[in-house]
Length: 276
Image 1 (tube, rainbow, N blue to C red):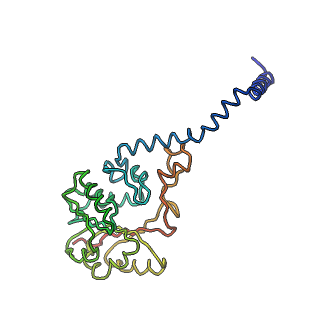
Image 2: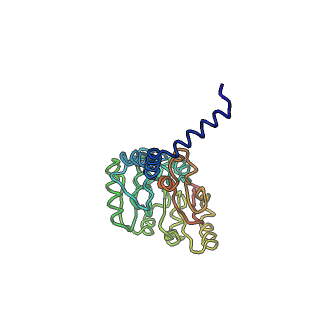
Image 3: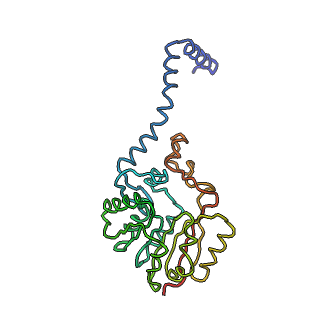
């Protein structure tokens, strides 16, 4: 068996020959030049896999199909992988076991929650409300793609007035993301109407301590409250949280996982205390 010193000498000999070879150096420089492209290959393959099908891969809305590529909020890859707002998934799964008169999605955007709810709550009317007409048109197209158009009503409607038309003796599911409008929409009159309903509200504070305390107090007699936050301050779904992203450079992997959030981003999960 060759001695260690002999093997070390062979290694150094080969290294010296390589370093003195113009051809080898040229090849190494070529690989080094092309390396940034090669490092993107896993990212390109993953993006091709999800965008060729446009089908959500995981989560409560698994199997939901987008009619075409869309990028509200620049989180389309995250949505398709089923990683969007994962901290809400368990609550949606819990609500899925219940029966609601109808579902109201305030701030519906392109219809992720509107169409998702129409799929997991069979034969239940879902109202998608938004101020952006292009979003509403996409939502209607989205509904047709998933064969739930007869259960979806997407419109530019005053959400506060729409809640006024609901029956206070029935149970509804309300999902709200309206950039601070929640403080006006859920006034005392509407809270009485919704006392038997369940709600998921994304909060948008201007004065965190004051607004949070006041808003929580509105529901203390009618609902049980769970406050959800993202899994990391300032964002959700960091790259290192997912093994399938470990071979992709961080700057590309972020496109499949990370969603920036305000440090104080919160969601109120409100479950009615009394359904009777």
